[in-house]
Length: 400
Image (cartoon, rainbow, N blue to C red; front, side):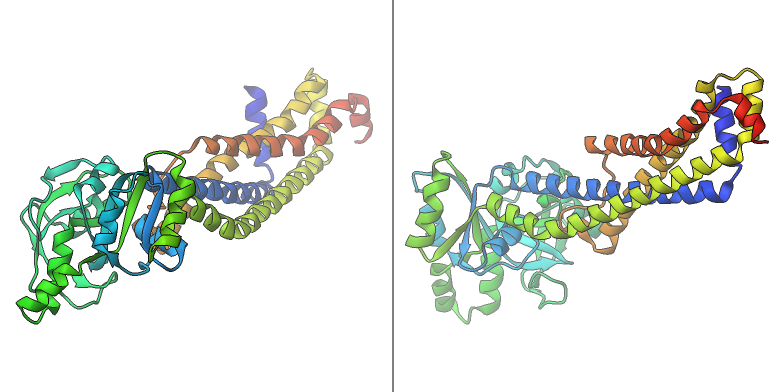
């Protein structure tokens, strides 16, 4: 205990140097913590929202755009496809489940999605209040939508055309809230869900000129895309080729597109990792220089400790404890700063409405941050500690 107390006092006997070493080490650890947290949260969100979705079928265009818009609700859809074509896919022998999705309107920035109850069941979402829809123009709110809007069961609202605020309001077609989903961390938290018939009814009411026109529109109904689950893994080889070559639609594999997306942003992540490595190397050199200088400056103190009976290992342990104090403090500050940076990024870029980035999380990989700090501090202290260990008390006294 005396060694620990002495090392603490020795550390702060030079407060400016100690604070600089602590700052450099904390910055490096904060950068690594930030990268770990962002990577963990994004991967978790991708895995959560992609679970059970083998392929997305929609209008021809960018496959990645189709995935981002259909699964994560982050992008603009590539277009619409005929309802009859999606219904035909339900009869395909390689298809186990088809979940139609229809988009185009929003409410206060949150997307209104026409679908079936299978969409809610797919993500294993539970109702916190109310019930699912039983008729068109009824809606179930995601947990985040309900929290930010303050809506309750029985409240009514109208959507606006487009996926961003400021579009034309569909004032003649109000929705009634029948249910509110419990939070489950999936894309459903930030959606307004309604039956497919609601989306068709809203646009047919606004655009149809008469009953004949409305009848024509009913016969030509469309959806935005379909989320599909295969019956067998073999379908992953043949089904997308069938869609892309034999129909006017396209099939996009989520796993393939997300891998491509992550590889595109991998260069930026590598640069950040390199920056964090440079900060840690700089911190290690700074700690080494500070401890090496401390051995030189404290030769009288070390001589006195040896004369009072302190063995060489305790003198060396004093310097190692200083390094351990730095590692402990820097780990705490680095992890807290990394969590703060992640939360700040989620707030500043409003990513909580996309992949829910920014919430506090403690992945297992985060345990490596204190271990890294310990390794850097000890590596920096080994040579100064060995210098203090091997010098005899007589040499220390003679240097005075």
